[in-house]
Length: 374
Image 1 (cartoon, rainbow, N blue to C red):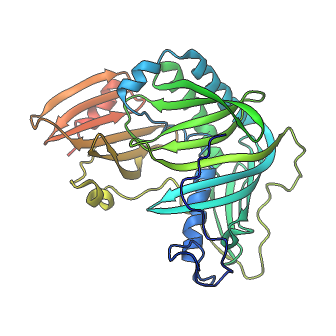
Image 2 (image 1 turned 120 degrees about the horizontal axis):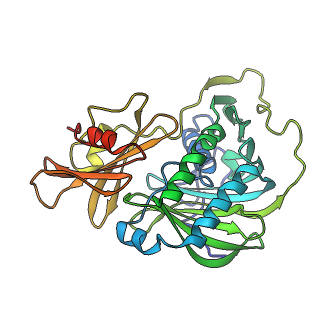
């Protein structure tokens, strides 16, 4: 298996509460304040509950040229479809490693995982020391995150329930050719032969993902998320896994907590920064639609780099469908009327910026949205 360790792991040489003897960037901080521990736990939890299932509706493309080259790869599409089905139905138990880069900091952890398809999942942290005992439980209706060092419990809407809603949308996009999949190579994860597939969405220059699909079961045993510039910002892989195992009746019950636990609402891990908050990173003012179909609301914003240009991404959702709006400086400053390069994509030039809207709505609705951008 390839070595996908992204950077130095968190310092394991220090005792809790001690200053790091190796680096001032150590992830283990004061156990009372423990702010880094909380932010790391939240970042890792978000990755763990979306890595296998792509956060459905936000599967993205590396570029139109690559998408065009691999669109006819039917074997890849069949493997991807099989993977989605396996992840929705299989029961498993195992140990995995997760590595995430967030805001220049590397987060490394190991977890014990119990999963019953998209009906229940339990993730218990084994390392690093600052996260030992932290747990995320999703029973298909509610998700809980328990921070034992702070005796704090967060709870919110199930992430698995959201993924169940998005599976049909993803399969429709795959059938229409809006998602393209290619087979890369064969490798081994946790001692099991796997086929590596690369998954992209047409017309979206954002992140794209690779999956190591178990040949025997179809389950995703390793996931890597790539940025357009080629960097990897999230990796998760099993080191040991067993399938079709018996699961205890209380496996997906709320976490056991200590007396006096503090309970608070769970912040949605998909709720990103506002468009205005990322304007400084992009270097230009965000343009936003003044019209959205009934039920759609702003979800998140971000900035990426592609071919030495900043691309601002805004996402809007109604809970079942996702709209992605991309903005980047145009090569020509002359406004251009909407064009339709693909059934799910409309693009135009407004005020010196190229605007691209990607979604599965009708052409009339897509046109109305993009022409309302100001």
